[in-house]
Each structure stands twice: as C-alpha cells, then as structure tokens.
Length: 432
Ligand code: SF4
Ligand code: SF4
Image 1: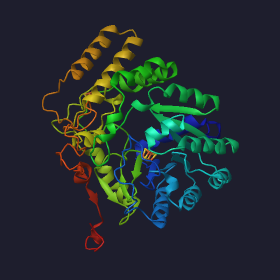
Image 2: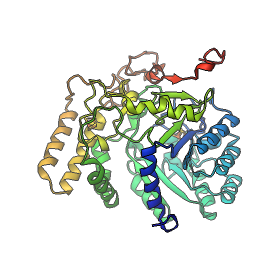
Image 3: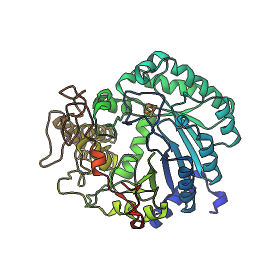
Image 4: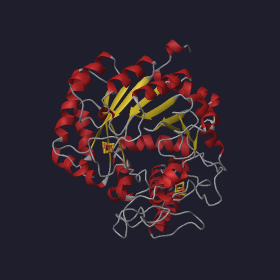
C-alpha cells in the first residue's frame, strides 16, 4: 500500500511503529503557561502566577528544534493557553513548522478574533474541557460565575467556522450527575466527547485536588453503563493488557520513547507529570536533551519496593511512576486508590468475557485493598491518603515526604527532579 492510499489511522500506526524503533520524538506537548483564568477544584497546578515561564522567543526556538527532530503531533496546552497575550504568535509559529497541531483550552477566553485566526490557519484539533453544563455548576467547579455562558459562545464560534472541536470532562464527584448530560449535549452538536474519572494530586505534592475524586465504584460504573466506552475498554484490555509480563524496568508506558513534554519553565521531560530526568531547554538544545538524560529514563530499573513491576494489570492502571511520585514521593510507590479501581475494572471486563473465576479473584483483591490491605514493603501515599477527602490535620499541606502543618507545600516533585544542564554553561551565573 502506498502512502497516498493509507488512511490517517494506518499512517499514524505505521509512523508510531517505525518511530518507536528509532526512538523519534514524534509526539510532544508544550505547556506554554501555568497561568489560568479559572481555579478548578481538581486542578494540579500549584502556582498560577506565570513566574519564570518561557518567553515567546524561547518557545518559538524550542518548537523549531522539535520540528527539526521529526516531531509530527504537537499539543499546545496550559494552564489556559489564551492567558498568554502572545498565543497567536506562538500558534502561527507552530503552524509554520508543519505540525499536526492540537490546542487544549477551557474555552472561556475564545473570541471572534481567535476563532478567525484558527479558521484561517486550522489546527488538527481543538479540545475544550467542560466543567459543567450550567453557570451554577461552573461556579462550584471553577470558582467563577458566568463561565458556562462563555464556553457555550466559544463552542458556537468554533461550530460556525467548522473547526475540529471536541469536548471532554473530568468525571469528578461534583460532576457525577452531569457526565451523561454532557455526552448528550456534545452529541446534539455533532461533537466528539470523552471523559476520564481520574483526578491526580497537585504538582507540588498536595493531595487537596483528590478530595473531589469519584469513588472507585463510580469510576467503574461509568465503564459498565456506557456500551461504547465498555467496548473500547474491552478491545484495549484484550490487545494490550492481557499479554502484560513482569518487567525489571521502571517505565512501562511510551513516555520518552516517542513522546515528550516541555513545561512552562522550559524543562524537557518524558511525561508532563514525571519529574525525573529533566533537561533545561533554556540552556541546551532539544536534541541534546532528548538523546541524553531524557532518554535515560527508559533504562531506569524498578526499585526493590516496586510491587507494580510484576503486576499483570499495570497496562491499564493509572498508577505509574508519575502518579506514584505525586502521591507517594517515589516513582516506585503503590497507590491503593488506583489499585482498587484497576482490579474492579478488570473484574468487570473478565465478567464480560465470561471468565467468572478471574473476575471473582480481581474483585476480592479490590475489596481487600478497600479494607486497608497494603503490599509488604511498598512505598505508600502519605497521610493525605487517596481515600480520605482532606488532610487529617486540615492544613492541606501534607505530602509524601511529611506534613508542614502550615499548609505550605513540601514539594516532593521538585526535590526529585534532576535537571541536566550542559557542562559548558555550568559556570553561567543564571544557573540554578
Ligand atoms: S481550567 Fe485547567 S488549568 Fe485552569 S484551573 Fe481549571 S484545570 Fe487548572
Ligand atoms: S497499583 Fe495495583 S493494579 Fe496498579 S499496577 Fe500496581 S499492583 Fe497493579
């Protein structure tokens, strides 16, 4: 089959397959800012000030370097991307590099001029995250009045221009009654809709956002009651989870193989939430970082306390080195909330496949975790447990490495982050 005859899906799969062998940076995301005009209850961002973020020129240079290394898919995300006054300049520069460009936004700041720009230079995709279907719900979830009205207007701006918009949501507890309605709302507009039930801890180690997590039962109920969702899961389960074998390596996902992330401070990472093996792109090139310290993450071995490396379900578990760092302070840590969800989910799938014995075994494991069982020797979440809705002392500053009581973050992620800077610049007074 020639390239011209291939569907986009086949082309993408071929590229990823071949690119993985060559470890090409095919897909990347750049958080162009942590600034945001909302304050969502579940948000993972610890600091919205925009302090120390990349300049326009720095972002443009990085985008150019990334394109030179063969990147195909690029995501511009935040924070809220439109909180940068230079968004249009960054967007147009990214377009000029030839990326298949996607933009994530909360949709509340889109106006006619941005919509016209996107219509003239169309992105590959635009995704708005919904935080409700009414101004009242938005007030509860984002802290501001009138925001759904704004998003609704922005959706119309996109639809009028036939832009490739899709909608998504976080199935957190305050939205429990609205997810189905959001799906119906999206369908009525002819838009794709997806949602995820997972809420992570904040990047500074605070578990405060997890207070709005849905219960494991509700997360799995979403899968069980949505036939399309269940069907997609079952396909994934059969194809990618069932063959899972034990590994001696820390990383099981594709981060750092074909994909990368750049945070607002210009640190190149293998994944947006994994604060290990970072490279300071303000001081060196993307190529040096990608083929240097960032690539080395793939060689890291799982620690002796890592009970997940031998787990047959880890391919579908939201516990990974990144979430483990966020919740336990260690990339080898174990997270009961995710373990329970994964085993309840697997029980549902095995039941659907007619394997009642395996389903019973998985459900029994989930119940055991719910009852407080922990694997021997595992590194566990700190006192701000994923199963409690707030820190026991009420300070909200708990983290795996210890509670400050004052509510100030102990920031386990920044304690772990190793950022490599080129030796030639080691004496640079701007260093550190
Ligand atoms: S819109 Fe996104 S970045 Fe802004 S506060 Fe909400 S979750 Fe955080
Ligand atoms: S948290 Fe539990 S289900 Fe997830 S990978 Fe670890 S052992 Fe497996």
